[in-house]
Image 1 (tube, helix red, strand yellow):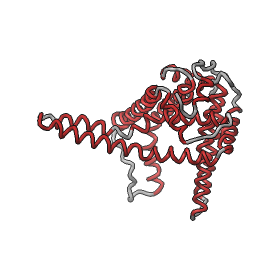
Image 2 (tube, one colour):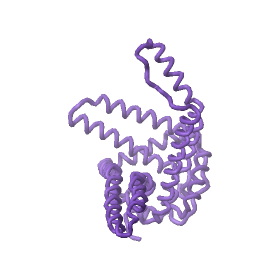
Image 3 (cartoon, helix red, strand yellow):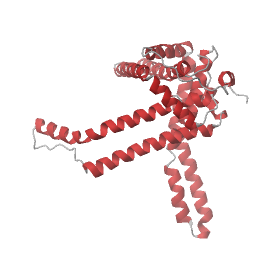
Image 4 (cartoon, one colour):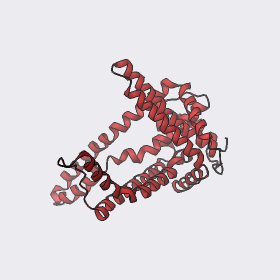
Amino acid sequence: MDFLGREIIQDQSFLPPAEPRHVSPLRGLAWIREGFKLFASQPGRWILVLGLWLILSLIMPTLVTVALEDMRRAIVIAVTPLGIQDIIGGLLELFVLLAPLSTVLLFPVVFAGLMVGCGEVSYGRRLSTRHLFAAFFREPTRFITVGGINAVGQILMSQAITWFVHDQIGELDLSLSGSLSAAQNLNSLMEKLSQFTPLVLPVLLLQMLLMAALWFTPPLLVFHQMTPLSAVRASLLGCAKNIGALLVYSLAVVLMLSFVGAVSMSAGSGILFAVLALGVLVAAMTTVIASLYVSYREIFSPHA
């Protein structure tokens, strides 16, 4: 198994993760500070790696869709003499429509590679674009399974929202009548939107539960010999034990991203301003990614 990131993985491979530790809520701020240090140590390399990741995320669904569509056409032509081209074509069309899910399914694999890269940087080693693919050497089906769990969870929540809207509320007309006053229009709109109130809390809780289940899962999978379900359970336990630190961390991230948004909108026009906005965005993204690795090390890593 000769690939970049082997050393950092072998530092922790085959070791069970430590029992999730409880840390002070203020450690949530320290995770962001230490995550930024990982970015600041090699900013140019982080920009290159994240740039490649974003490009792949944008073009991968299109490439998969084109490949599946070409395959579908070839198979349909091949089975035409059998008279079953319509049935086969319909079945294969479903796979083509599901192609955009490839990004969701592969996200844990790539993100785990970024965790390997964070580990390398924390050990004083150089970050490389090849770190994005390090987890492909660690039984990628485990990561794809986690991506499938995420996809199924998101689909189920979307279907639940659709069911609630259509069966409990009915078709909502949020259009505003021009014959009514502004105050009447506003009151009418607020009354209609208030019908969604019973849905907000359950959806929010389910989304938080899904995030907690997947929060530490990529590093747990890539650094330890764990099954997807074991990693999900460990991630849930780690989040439950450190809900205070995660709340502080989440609030700090929201404030940081709000600042990044403000900087981007006020940057003005021109190449120099665009580069400035992009640099701030990459720094924020890297800080968030690296801070997750820092939190994993502190809560789970046997070497912490």
